[in-house]
Amino acid sequence: MNTGPISHRQASAPQEPAVPAMIPDSASASDGVAVDYGDLYGALRDATVMMIDDEPTTIEVLQAFLESEGYKRFITTTESSRAMEMIVAEDPDVLLLDLHMPQVTGFDILTMLRHDARFRHTPVIVLTSATDSDTKLKALQLGASDFLAKPVDPSELALRLRNTLAAKAYQDRLTFYDSLTGLPNRRLFMDRLLWSLRCAKRENGSGAILHIDLDHFKKINDTLGHEIGDSVLIEVGHRLEGCAPALAVGENDGADSQPLLSRMGGDEFNLLLPIMPRVEDAVRTAGKILAAMKEPFSIDGHEVFLTASIGVAIFPNDGDSADALLKHTGVAMNQAKRQGRNTYEFYSPKMNARALERLKLENELRRALDRDELLPFYQPKVDVLTGCIAGAEVLLRWNHPQRGFVSPVEFIPLAEENGMIVEFGAWILRAACRQNRSWQSAGLPNVRVAVNVSARQFRDGGFLEILRYTLNDSGLDPRFLTLELTENTIMENAQENLDTLHAIKKMGVKLSVDDFGTGYSSLSYLKQLPLDELKIDRSFIMGIRTETDDAPIVTSIISMAHSLNLRVVMEGIEIERQLKFCRERGCDEYQGFLFSKPVPGIEFASRLKVQA
Image 1 (cartoon, rainbow, N blue to C red):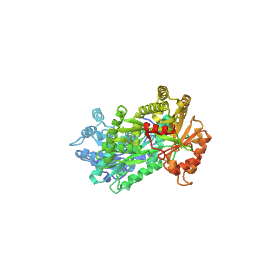
Image 2 (spheres, helix red, strand yellow; image 1 turned 45 degrees about the vertical axis):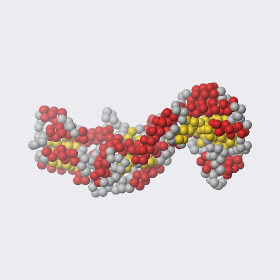
Image 3 (cartoon, one colour; image 1 turned 180 degrees about the vertical axis):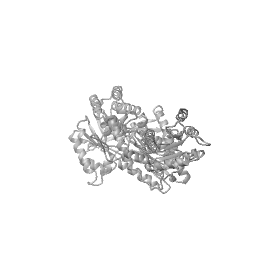
Image 4 (cartoon, one colour; image 1 turned 90 degrees about the vertical axis):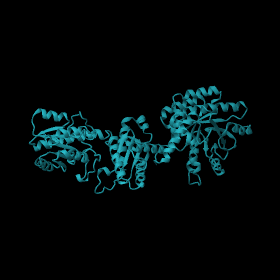
């Protein structure tokens, strides 16, 4: 909407529709809804009206009348040869156009308008003294929106101008605004971004784009339905609007200098900061967005929790074209996802290089299994009281021919994202079962081998069949196999997962909750699950320095787990003091570098042989 005097308009600046919400959201073009014009048309009077007529008196009379009706912004000319130049510079909302003028006629101007994509839909009310049908027909064929005969009746002009602007406002809403949230859409965002880029280059300024992607939004649609999901998106839009900084507007600045929030589609939003004196402005804004998302969304009796991942690009440093900037905000946003979500990341050339390196690593990972580069390593699980090995957790390792051992922190998330984790999971399950059966055949003590099952692998439709086949193929007694699943994996689609857990339990396989305390932490729900073991996340033992730290929490977890007949394993034991704590609290088993790091199968067998 135009908000300042005409003299403050900057040439070719993209202009938001005069009335973004002309017709109620519940109305459609075919509803026949009676619009309450009242205050809505007060906003219409901020529209810029351009009059092109070779008769100065006509312009003066019409402008005087329209001013009395509340219209405030006018562009006028009696020189039709300058009309297109002025239209390009000022981008009016509506034209009042005389047809019969010397040099350049109204027909010529209509033709030029409709051949220019920028003004193809600008409404034009033709004013002419000609009354013949051929003139009217020609004007309409060239794209005139309405037709008024001279001398113009003022009341009729006011009515036709009002209706023309209302139709334009509604059309603009459909064209430039998202129908669900009412926010500017991708088209309007791109217009404003291109303009902001030109201004930044011309004035040696800078701006920023914040690309906001909601974390795990698909779960809301899948579990609560799309209607709830849509309501959440609307509320998210409201919260994000409150996070946009109100930039100071100078004498020669207008609406185009203000931040613009848009919904780009789905659960993605972009916030454009066209003027950004300091990088701290983008940091502060990203922080406000993350803070605004912390409060739960209350929708139709449902309490929904959401976080967001934000990618930030600064222009023109991070890109001097709209396409490059949007690509780079996407790269930065994906980096935020990899950092654990609910955070923001800035784009930099280093990040782009990292993305290329990541693509190379992914291609090499796809060939790792065929090239026998993947290895199972075993970390002992030790009985706290006896100090003997009670089992092992099998961990996937990648021995790259050039890179050496690649950190699991690098390649496991990558395998999760591209789906390779399902194939890798089946492979290591097979390797662990065969290895354990081999140790037993060699006369080594019987131990339980624990295999991590990823969420993606667990949800895979063929998981139970793969498990059943692997046990039969290896000949391993199921009671010597433990499957470790995280809390989040179990709790997602809890009822469906419960059926799968019972099916696994029926096979005789043990079940363990891994990294307990980092997810839902619902001890009350544990009693509904057919579990055998609970592993307390290493972050708890690392946080224990005094009795006032996490000690009471760990103590209560162990106590409640034992009341449910669950074996308790403490992860991350690295020093004697931590082991002493576990022993005093009645923990059953532990694993960690204090006893052993993960080792190859041969070395683990040697340790077992000592206990034989």
